Image 1 (cartoon, one colour):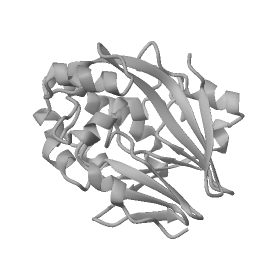
Image 2 (cartoon, helix red, strand yellow):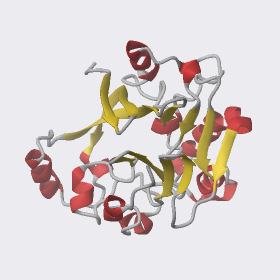
Image 3 (cartoon, one colour):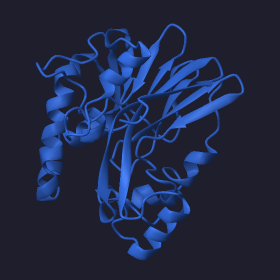
Image 4 (cartoon, helix red, strand yellow):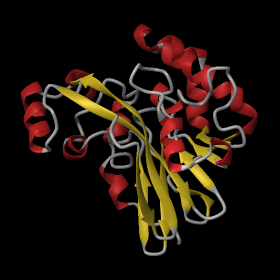
Length: 256
């Protein structure tokens, strides 16, 4: 496995990127509507492999001083190559029971699959959870499940199986065009498209800021070519708007 963590800071916030593993995806799944040769050319220009998209499953732990926050919880045992988040945390000395808050950008399997241990108990037993109300309602809607492609209906079952056990400790946030500040220097934005209730998280401390964007943008080419999208996008039109693509890069900073 590659290095299991990467440490950096945002102002006074201590941040650690943690790996849960990785997976190779066919080009057509990550660039479902793009010319294959153009995709290969762009991948080579960025120094990536041009036969598959090697996707690292990486999540962010932030110690803001008094609170320890985890953004997304990994894929769990979704794939043979995943399920390494807890061991990555152990290397860094981060105790699962020390996590105060889990912010879920969205409820795709590779972002909620690590919610539970093998015995069905919460992996982060003392944490509270934040997810957008729109996201929660989408994955719990039987009508939306019926409208989904047959091959992806299991996503709904997977989301419910992993979200419902922590429902009593989950806060559903309703967002408009502005951010919601969770704590001083930590806020969430609405960035629909990849999923209906997708969130991005903004950190701001001192003169520094960072956006944790989940899957609002997967690769640099998705910023260069906003019309290119992965097969997993639920609302392609929404993803193409500036609110959830290039517009992410011009958000105003939260107050430090």
